[in-house]
Length: 231
Image 1 (cartoon, rainbow, N blue to C red):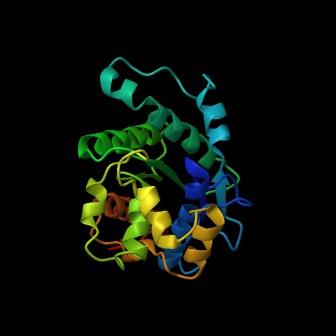
Image 2: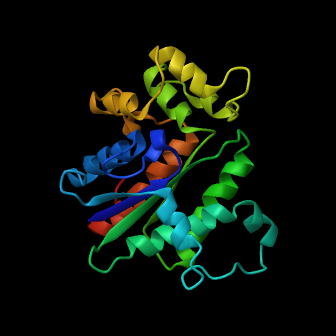
C-alpha cells in the first residue's frame, strides 16, 4: 500500500518526509492501527510539498477547466478541487499501487457550511480525476482544535473547540491557547515529539465531527483496499 499525503502547513502535514509534520505522522499511526505496520517505516508514505501540488494543478493537460455547473461554489473552493485532482494524479503513479491519498486543509471557519463545501470540493476533485481512494482531511476550524482536544481535554468533551474562531487574530485564538498550554511555540519538532510520545492520537478523538468524518472516510478506503469492511 502506497499513501501520499499533502496539504498546508509546515506544522501540520510538513514539507517532505525529511521535514514531516505531526499530522502526517498521525495519519500513518491511524492507518497502522488497521493494517498492522507503519507505512513510514517501509517508505511507502510520501509527503508531497504544496509547491508540487500547485505545479501539477496548473498543468492544463491534467487539470481541465471547471464546468459551469455549480460555478459559484466551485469558485469559492476552487483551490481545494484542483489540489485534490493534482494529488490524485500523483497518487496514481503506476509503479506504486494500490494507493490512497489524503489531502489536508484547515477550514479556517467555524461555520459548518464552509467546512462542508471545502470537504465536498476535495471529494469532487478526487472523483473528477477518477480516483476513488482520496480522503479529504479538513480541520474545523483549525488543526489546533484537535491538538487541544488531546493535550488539554484528554480526548473528552471536545465539541466546543470546533465552534471557536479560526482567525489567529481573534481575542482567544486556538494557536495561542495551544502555545500557552505547551509553554513554548508549537513548532513542528515540538508537536512531532508529542506524537512520538503517544500524547496525541487521532483514534481517541471521537466527538469532533471534523475528525470522525476523516476517520470514516479513511476506514472506507482502507476497507476497500484490504477487501474487508472496517467498522
